[in-house]
Image (tube, rainbow, N blue to C red; front, side, top):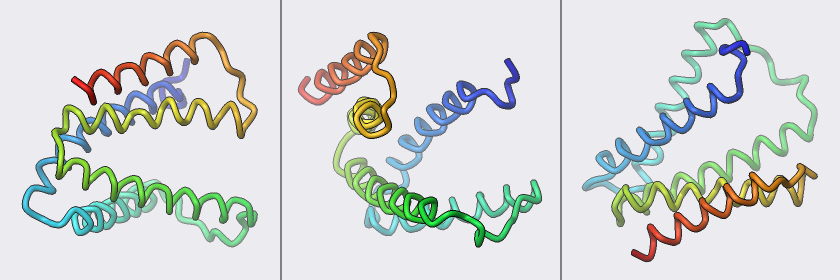
Length: 143
């Protein structure tokens, strides 16, 4: 397996950085408006992404993108923004040790949506793994 092209490597990186996001976010929203914190975070993400595009010489005109790509990328951006606004407010109000795991219910929801809307195959490992995520979130939220 080529590690530079492995979805698993990037997924693990995503999980690691998401954990840091929760920790740093909890510390960052202390004493400020959670919406302002989300705005600052968004600016930083834009700058980091622009830096990566520049270093890798990957800038390109997006004029050739299909209309469906534009629609779904805009919808994804709206969903991301709403998710971040909710996440930072939750971090401001609750402990990171409860907010972050409950946020990961998105994994179980994504499994269901992938099966229902994208026609992805449901397997026992997905059912059991998704069920354990839901069960874990319930235990964390209730106890």
